[in-house]
Amino acid sequence: IISEKKSICNEIKNRKQLQVIKLFEGRVVRYNESKNFCYQRTYEPKWSDVWTKIQIRVNSTKMIRVTQVENEEKLKEMETFNMFDFFSSFLKEKLNDSFIYVDLYNNKTCIKVHVSDTDTYYSVALSRGFDPRLFFVFLCGLLLFFYGDTLSRSQIFYYSTGITVGMLASMLILVFMLSKLMPKKSPFVALLLGGWSVSIYVIQLVFKNLQAICTEYWQYLLGYLGIVGFVSFAFCYKYGPLENERSINILNWTLQLIGLLLMYISVQIRHIAVTMVVIAFCTKQIEYPVRWIYILYRKIKLKRGKPSPPRLLTEEEYRKQGDVETRKALEELRGYCSSPDFAAWKTVSRIQSPKRFADFVEGSSHLTPNEVSVHEHEYGFGGSFLEDELFGEDSDVEEEMEIEPVLYQDLR
Image (cartoon, rainbow, N blue to C red; front, side, top):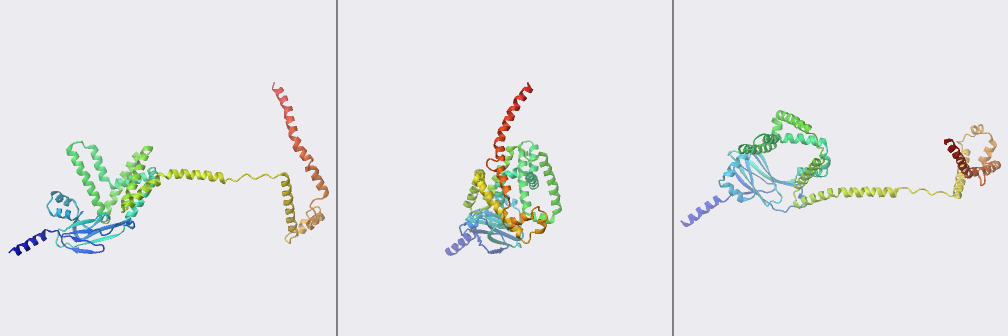
């Protein structure tokens, strides 16, 4: 009798024990009744898991309800009757395909699958891998943070953001406008709070069923986007883009803060996320000093890179260089005249002294002794050209001094 009582007690305890099915990566389980599932973390996140996503997918033939909790204790609490859980279960929508995202640092994650019909079959699968959406969110945050100032001053960004917000949050905007018109009494406040909750719930429901809405109700969707988009554009056009510098700064800071938050939530490794946020913030802050240093460097480089003024030649160097270049040019001319390409007869018919030209080609001087003496007399030391250069200025000064008294007398 005692042994039978012990066996009965053990059976009762076993029935009271919570049945939990463990989930493993790459393994798919299928059931047709309500079950509890738990995932136990078996490894520490690494730096290569920066944009890694762990998700639990529940796919069923009919509508089911999936509830996510922290551990088995929460599952046991759900087995007992709780008024709050009873009402919250009705707020959770039923779906054929549910995705539960698991934090990499959660030691354990549990779900409960509620099945209302016995002929409902569902499968539960756990997967882990690179998520391109997390990387896209990180890039968006990076762009918002570094280009917040440019975007806050852009009219295209102003109108596109206003129209997008109007399309996505039209119900919230409607509730906000009604809150301005309704009196601030307790019944109306409760009504407004309920309106906010319903609006958020409807937005969440629309996003989860967006694919079905686009395929089945695309006409209504286009009508909604057209009407709400036009109203949003008219509202933005009425108030116009931001012109006050303080308002622009507030928008810039808001965009930068949103960018940092997007960068943080998109990186799954927490210490790496904090490091990236700090690096981005420091890089943004040192942008202006780096720009000033670069401008200063450019100015110093331009000053140093300017060519130094050429050294002036002395009179002796000038004469030597002139003689060298003259001889060089004459030799080139003799070589050209001796080449087969030179039209000798045509040239001889045009010049006044063919014999002198022939002597020059044969190697004689290009100047006669008379021409050399005339040149020395005109341009040599003590020549008339040098005298005009030296004494011409003095004569000009004397003429000016003679003219000034005459002008002074005429003026008197």
